[in-house]
Amino acid sequence: MKLPAWLNQTVVLQINITIWKIVLALLLLIYGAYVAWEIYWYRQVGLYFIKWHTHIVFTTLLCFLLWLPFLLFHKIFRVAFTKNLLLSTGTVALLLVLFEIFLVITGMNKNYMEQRSGYYQSPYDQNMGNYYNIRQPQKEYLLESGEFSFTRVTNSLGYSDGEWKLEKDTNVIRIAALGDSFTEGDGAPADSAYPVVLSRLLNELAYKVEVFNAGISGSDPFFGYKNFTDIILPYQPDIVLQTVSSDDMLYDISLRGGFERFGNDSLLQLKKAPWWEPVAAASYLFRALMKIAGLDIDNPGGGVKNKQHVAKLNEQLQNLIIKYDSVAAFNNVKVIWLIKPLKHEFKGGQYVFDYTDVNSVFPELKNTIVFDLLPCYLQHASPSSQTYSDFYWIIDGHHNSQGYHLMAQCIAPVVAGNIKNRKAANALSD
Image (tube, rainbow, N blue to C red; front, side):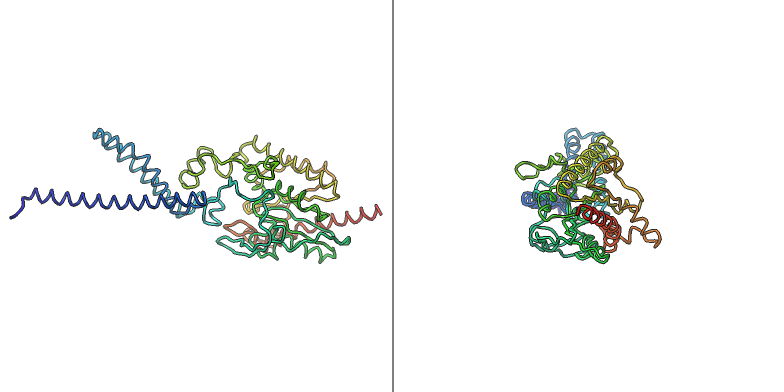
């Protein structure tokens, strides 16, 4: 018996609807399983769980939730206006998802650590390290990015260096190099870190020196001061080299604060992340919108455009320099502050952060001087027609071996001059 045509169409329509319901149910099941999996890893590792696929799924969910009220509105009223509104908002939501996918593919709006390691790391991580931000003692680890990979081994104190001896030869000038990854030597083999090269250069000039590498990736001058006073002073350094950069000022100190980060209970008291950080971490699109609104997860102070914030940073650094000098004077130590240029600053020929106010402090201090590395970098590069790309890794931004050699070459004459002055002063006192 042949069924009527209209009945055939009804059966086909019902079958199609059933198929679409099954497909939709499977998609929702897969999506639910994925979300449950991501929530599990969030509970295990925090925001470290975020990967490239997290961005796409999260933005898709966010856009769907924003579009859902328009869908419900249309289901209730079902008029031409609601239909047009539903289509237009749906189109916008789809375009936003496609833009998120574009940002994932191109890498735009990634922060530095995402470019380097491939996953999100919160700058507000309350478990960033111990009181001194040093590594675990006697551990092997890698300094790596997409451009390089170099092995390091820490000594018994947690620094990327050989063992230090407390006993000191009176004929040897002991130098402690404090700073961040540019002192530790990130981006080059251990024997190319600037403190190692500096030691070779000074010994070649007939100066008997020991150079301790107390550089720690992610450190800043306030951590440097605490390492100096609490750990390094017993080793009787004659000279301390402390680096400072625009990133130290505008990011690290902005995020961590100054001395207020050091609590009385030997625990770091770091600033808390803004409530919207998880959304910014999971969506490049949201980051773009936040920047338009003047909010930046990595730069809460507003950068150099916020004059009041910059003035506060200057005041914090000035106080640190004065306190550093006071401890150094009491222990007969010379402190040399090294202003180091980042890749884009070397390329542009000027610093992002204005050190003018900070520099005004140094002439008043007897045991502290400052040396700006940028003019020396530019002077060495100009005659040989070398550019920033010869001294820095292009994507990562750290020095390569040639860059650390340049850094040591620029620092060596300053240190040698201070050694001469120290020996002359000791001769007069004898």
